[in-house]
Image 1 (cartoon, rainbow, N blue to C red):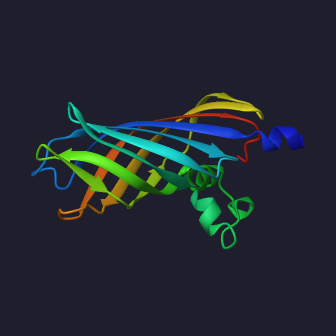
Image 2 (tube, rainbow, N blue to C red):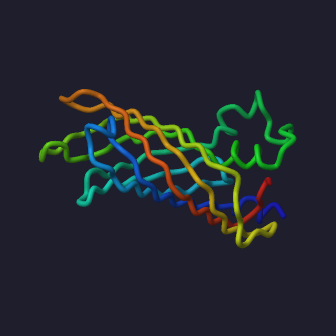
Image 3 (spheres, rainbow, N blue to C red):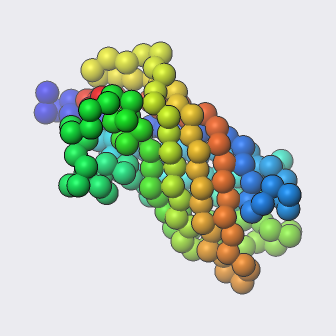
Length: 169
């Protein structure tokens, strides 16, 4: 059982539509992101924004709110299964490095924090050792740009979660 718990890997892929800045000032962008989480808690992430050509690529790290707030709100003490899923599957993250094209020139973002909220899961496969689940998600991200004004992007879409190992919900 300990080996199963220690091998717990969780892979999440998001696809959504959103905007950089205000919808009246920009065109919609296709958002693709992927993250791997060890024990469903923390791991590396990557994001792509396309509209229709590549607008940006970023790499960073994300964690479940359960890792950040776990000492104040333990996951075992949340009475609702749906709220436990939202708490565990949502993400607080930072893209450490992003390169993007704005006004046909490359722009570098150094630190871009984001918050991602997920709905409860709809699972096609869910056993104690394996899951394939779908959620809706919404994400807001603050971009700190070099030599340009900082801005906010947001997107909404569908997320596909695949995991092997032990699941706490």
